[in-house]
Length: 114
Length: 109
Image 1 (cartoon, rainbow over the protein chains, first blue to last red):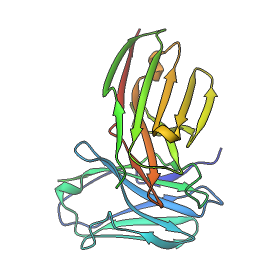
Image 2 (image 1 turned 180 degrees about the vertical axis):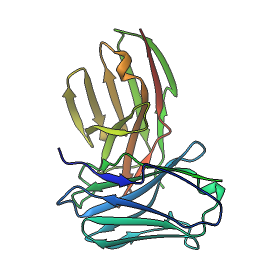
Image 3 (image 1 turned 60 degrees about the vertical axis):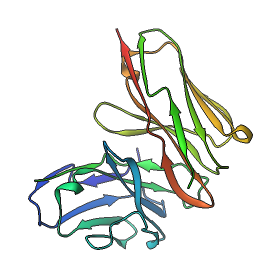
Image 4 (image 1 turned 180 degrees about the horizontal axis):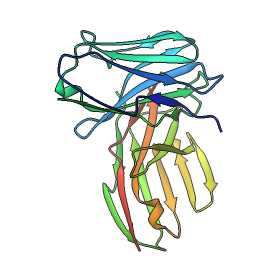
């Protein structure tokens, strides 16, 4: 049963600390998306990659967030330094590389920044 | 950018009842998906349905792309159907999914 995996599932950290979230897309999927869910903003796209290349990161605060795909099986989202307003659930999703395909979501990383 | 509106925002049903959830969108789309977010936060794909009609068990969905809306039907609802139902679309040539605010469904026994 192919699925997107994310680690860690929960993270509590203090303001100013670095946070790294990891995602393993479904094998064979070449498009990876990072979303954030908060009560106020709902679900919003932060960034996405095609064949490991970033295509759009306009939803991401550039000064503290960075997203990379070191290889086809790993995507990372890093926050440095973290702030309380970054507290949210971060979802990774993967798909087959066109806007006409289903995106499959991972279980999310629940981040709390104190 | 594209706007996505879902209605109703909240829905409370008794087990066994039927319901219809609506999603309106402001522009043409290549991708429309319905998701169920369960009480544990997991987003579960229900349908990929940029046009036409699909059925999966007690759930079915219809998208009328020319009129820019989609409907999700839940028949014979069960308590396990509780959660938030999201409609998400792309639009304007972008692959980004834009999510509606969701319909929170509560099914009481």
